[in-house]
Length: 329
Length: 167
Image (cartoon, rainbow over all chains, first blue to last red; front, side, top):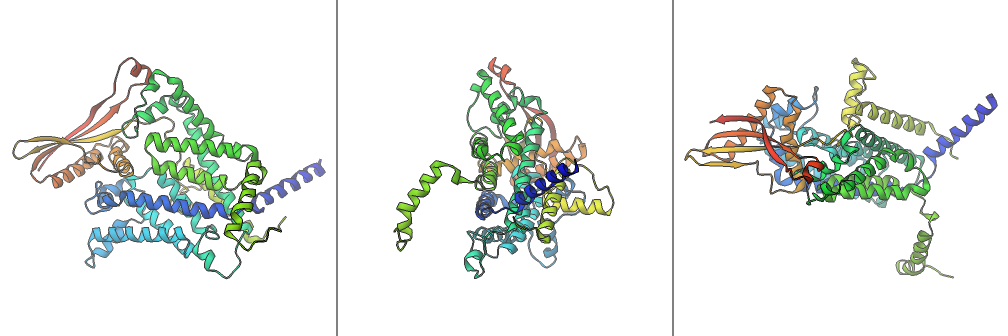
């Protein structure tokens, strides 16, 4: 019996080590970095015209009330910096403006992968400060960005598609550090989707389709007149069940090699639907990007015949154009 | 197979512990108590996003509110307006809408609601210098279920809170 247990333990240990240290591509994290930064910049651009309504001295929620809705212990906010610099004559709204510009600068440097580690840490901290400075305006995207940027602060996101990787003389590529980082991110994604789906399963609205009806028809989200669902409730019921299934079983089926791309496709369609039909463009975008990069790009595409054909076309037709000195003999 | 270096073991343990903290933060499990360790962990969770809740639209989809302002001017004119966030991009509209929805998050504390309403009224006074009275109306949206909608019953806004402020 102990021999059997010992064999099982050895097998499990090997699988565990392989899972966390087997070679993976360095590109998923790099592409994720770029796409997340693009979304952060789009978000910053979107609210830039109303900066002072959210963060200024005469914001929609004034600072003393902001404190009430904030955490029970101090967290850094732009207001603190503005109060400190106000002693030296700097205007409150000017501090807001310069803080925001610095945040955009930080995100831009992270996007191009210049001094990646430093700007990853700065972007994470700045996003935290910006989030806390108008806490009532936050929604789902802020929670996802927050933990993603924390991961960026210590994960090897600059090993490819970055200024740093082009400038360095050192040979950088895959190490187990990359795999461990990707796996931790993947496990975190599994947990967030399971929580989302499992939490919804306790709501009666998700079992009779009313959740989809409300989500599509409330004025805050409504983009199109989908009142036809009232006459054909099966549409809403199907969409609700699809959402529950895709989210709740994400942590299981995303790991099956043969099913992964289908699951990634289903998640992409779910979030495209959110972006198009609810107007949550940035939220739908970030959710789509996270799964696409973290799971979609971490996949063995060589198993597919269509990928082999594309590779052959690339090698035969495009490669000679890119590398004309390549010998074909 | 690569032999596991110590620093990789540390990374794996740290990463898995962080995920555990994310799960406990999401479900508000008080695993480490209220002492120094518990406080430190809570701060860590806050700074790293391990306290985030991902139960969006769960268990059900909440209704929405909007805030209308009835303005009475010194010359006797009356006007109704929102906070003018209808001609903005969707991201800004969503975030401003979240701020006004915070009214519901104040857990029926009349003092906080009054303070919020007063804060918004002061913004309206600042935007409209000739105004003398502002009535803040927080309205909830009543969307009938699909069955009733198909029978002809339609949505409407109704006042759930009204407060008047004068200069």
